[in-house]
Length: 439
Image 1 (cartoon, rainbow, N blue to C red):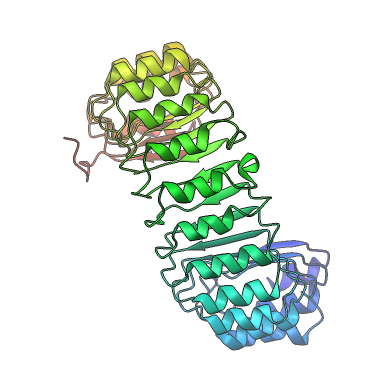
Image 2: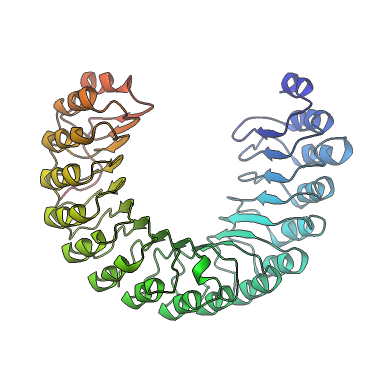
């Protein structure tokens, strides 16, 4: 690193994540890289606060506008104080996976880094309202990401929304104390285009109503409502009936156990919807057929939807011809007939995932060779009936294939699988017994 840094004085971006660099590298960095704009030290655990102190005493790194310190749990309050002093021009900071991060650490950062517009605090469970109210008082954000925090209250989000009127991306996943009151605050924003509240178990249909009737409903592009058990079919109706969320492109409702076919039938009216994730939902063939009438759909993830059958896939594919991705992993009722329909009606399919579908045979893969020119990714892990014919079919017809996963395929020999390895960029194979039940 010393040789690189001393020879590259015009370096703008440097990613040292997951390396064993020490304080010595940071010292050279701060002396030589005067132009550096972006630095990642994520999961570098061999440097200390002393290394960060070099940032304040040498000439370089004062122009940094992006810094990633995720996983660097060795940094104390003093370390964050040095960062604040040396990098006051920071615009984005990532502090993910830091269980040792405290309110005081964030406070010392906010005292100097007034130019921050984006901050990520995923998996930092001990931050309290003190942190978020300090952020609200000191800076104005456009993006904030928070995950796995059970101490943050609705009042914190209210303060953030009042101070950061240009917030466009908000992630509040697995924040178990968040209620509909937080969504009411979010509904007052005018620029919100990406919202993730997955795992906020107290959110109800009323909370979604605040968003869909809010000032930025037509701006919303991505919405993740996964693992929100209180949401019902009314939620889908709120989101999708015009003019609400008329520009929504990505929707995720994984494991929303109270959604039924009636709710999914409403999705056919969302003409802008491109990607839908309904993993673990209780959808049946009727609801799946209704989804097919949405001709804008390009990606459908329906993993663990155990009630759908070959007939449902056929009805869906007959209507949704421009599908590019289908994930039906662990949909145990599906057989070769489902893939036959997919390959016949969806000629541009590029990604197919059928892991954990025990009824699939080599014939299913043979059907996929009809679209071999477009197929780029295939996952057939945990399909015990597949044999050496599967890699043979893929070798002959799927010239664009870039990723193949054949884990727990006990009837595919290693010799046959290795022939395929040379043709793809990402290859996974094992012939062990599956660790999960296929019943």
